[in-house]
Image (tube, rainbow, N blue to C red):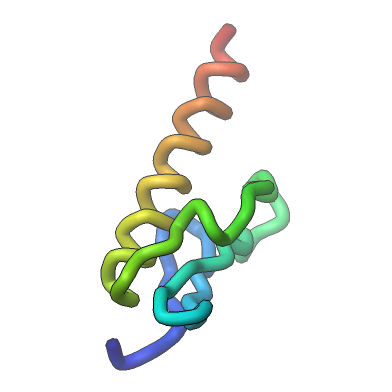
Length: 72
């Protein structure tokens, strides 16, 4: 992986190695986005690509829940 940071849907995903695995922190890049509060260990994966994919899935799930709350 070229970088330990990626952008996705307005969030910065910061990858880091933990033990022999990888995990990600998810940080909003704009003030109008909600903070995603979850343990980075929810993205634990054996590869940086796996951790990035898990982080993107968490963003999608979280934003889907937020959208449902606003509509309801």
